[in-house]
Image 1 (cartoon, rainbow, N blue to C red):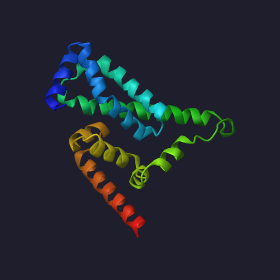
Image 2: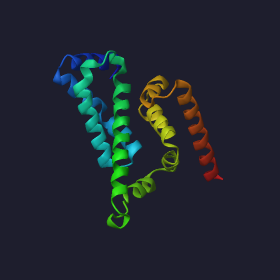
Image 3: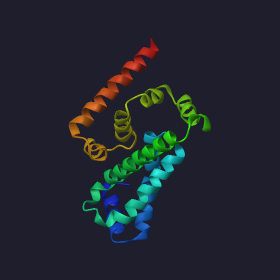
Length: 176
């Protein structure tokens, strides 16, 4: 779907058209969950973060001034919701004693199943990992990523460059 069609859906959703909102949801839901998973590394929490984000979108889409900003606004909401869930999960873990919980196997299983490159991406700093995900998988512009991560454009460029160099170095090391 091209940007003009997305803008049209956003305008219609702002005017309260349920079908337009449903189409936006269908268009971006999979990407939303995938991005939340990159931050949370937990499928259930990723679904929850995406769901919470869509609730906020439904309540506040009428306040969005620029329809072109919808995608970056959505991903910014997902990032905030994901970080909130991480904070809550950390507080919960601190309040429960370690012997009362089992070691979750999901993160280990996830990394083992990934390709070599995917495993190296997971080793990057969180902000670099998010920048790589948004740029290459979500095909967002550097300006959009800057808005989502709330950092200057130059910082996004340097983080992408640093992440690429790190990944290239690790891939070359494994081939030798």
